[in-house]
Length: 459
Image 1: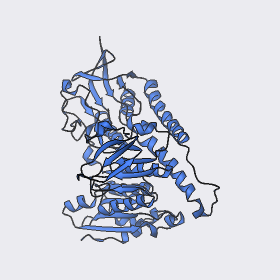
Image 2 (image 1 turned 90 degrees about the vertical axis):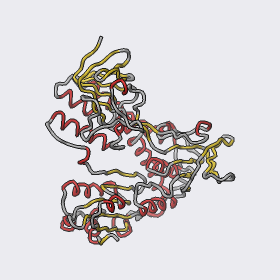
Image 3 (image 1 turned 135 degrees about the vertical axis):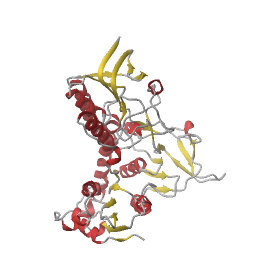
Image 4 (image 1 turned 120 degrees about the horizontal axis):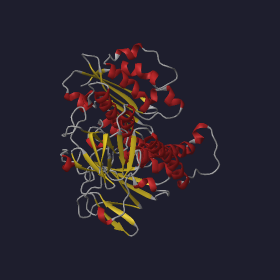
């Protein structure tokens, strides 16, 4: 017997639960389907657990530097990885259970725990039951990519998900992938006490960033003892006793890195392969991401794709913004679009990178006359007071309209400072407003007028 609903939400990542709650609040009878973990990637294996681990790693790092601040600690700093994991698990459990309770306790929502699959454009099967609705929202997220590299099937490896089960200290953690996930884990485990090697196929780390940002991040990580191996063509893996040997180039006698554990951090793929999307007529691209328009509608009327599975963003904040767009347009008579949002994200190494808008390559591609300015964090009083002077701030401006096109903030509290720039960008106001503002002293943000004062034509 078919069970009819006003809406079906498949998946409980960052956009699914608030949308389901909003639909129910509007009097729409809603079914929520979750096949594994309530809260999705961010809550269970992404943002929340990794940043909890980052906090533990920072505590160890600061403790080791205690003498620099005139603080005495007896004996070497030791890390209890079982307690680190226990703390992380507690934070995750609270968030996971919170999402589950929210969905199960909200009037108007019926929760199904199982694997949902489309059987048609408006029907989904789960646990042998058939659910039907005119509106269906897909929020199934993504998972770690396991690349088809030579030898990958012959060696044990970890991903960002399985790293969450680690309660020991790897002697030598080898990480394939020099981007956000790999670098966060690399610094984290180096601070826990592991030897760490990061292997990147490209000629620099985090290639989507400007070269000066990549170089500064590499300097920060190498300064903590992390080994970086770039230009690693023809990567292959093989067992070497109880260890893993990673070949770095194509030569017969190529150099190898031998480690105790291997982490694959080379990207993510959408969880769309087993949803029966073909039976619903929902189009996907060559990578498996669901094709959506500017309002997140799929190729089938009445079906939306929100969150990481639509390929229009790979962050918790973009997923939540997807919810806001859909809710506003569907329930509030709005006309919000994905193309209205400004790209922004953070790299949560320490110190962090906060990014908003265009990078230098993208800004040059506009053909506009550009202004750019930088300010070294060693010039910032707050940074000197804390002896954390690594990094710099960078701004890109349209010289004619005076609007800010992009910002890269690498340094202490940079992930928070960049939000001030983002607000100004959304307001569409001149960068000169920064010069007229009065900021609190002593903070990092008070140096934004100094940064603006350093603007000059980009050659």
